[in-house]
Picture 1 (cartoon, rainbow, N blue to C red):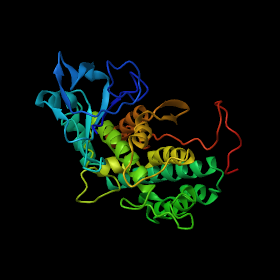
Picture 2 (picture 1 turned 45 degrees about the vertical axis):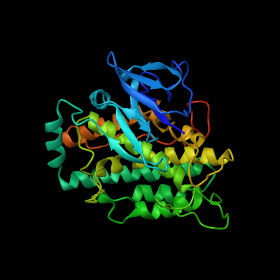
Picture 3 (picture 1 turned 135 degrees about the vertical axis):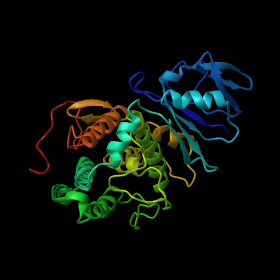
Picture 4 (picture 1 turned 180 degrees about the vertical axis):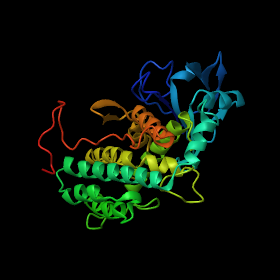
Length: 341
């Protein structure tokens, strides 16, 4: 079965749109025949056997996910997509994201910002690491509170994080967080959930959601002229996206919440994800998040985070902007009493 997805840019269409017959609505479609993707009058043209061609404006596209090996793309299209700041995600034979194609030149000030990142002092990187981990733990705590679970230890640890997280409170918080947030979510309800890349379901749901989040983060960094490789905390010599992995950390709980919603709806979690699972997880870039009391799609918030990182490296600021996970269920903008007192 042929599966391929187009995620539109939230600033133009705050939803995920899949290529359909003439694209009448932002719904998901599954295709059972091969597709030929090319450029037509500087727009994306989709041709499928037995179906009339469809056209999509490239400037409206943010991310393209390609899953089936029978999809064919022209070289002109492969050149045009990155030139328009479109990220291409490719998947393996199990339909799990495994490759990422990013624009080589994402910003006119790229050289200047590369140099600023390289010359960033160690104290600055440690401070940015501290802000990032604090934001991550707070969002984890807020999600636990939102789901009626005691999160006071995480709120306390978030305030205790030191420069560079020298006491490794991120790991301590993660152990408590995963034990509580995924309680009774494993196939064996008596087994403790173990978070891991190759762990049992629902790890596969988390992995897919994080892969989409990682692509969104890398795209935002490249668009601001920063290399996604040189991290502020992650430093694996075999990881080409250390900085993206750093910056996406406080955003992970938003993916976790989406996975929990899927589990709450009694969706099965097979070893190989179904199109329905992916339909839900591909909402990640367009999830509503709140930053500075302003609500926006996650993809837009990520761009603001990347822009704030540029200011930190250039010396204009000393603090990163991250969204805050709401810790209460409400249809209004007013919040109840702070859970920390």
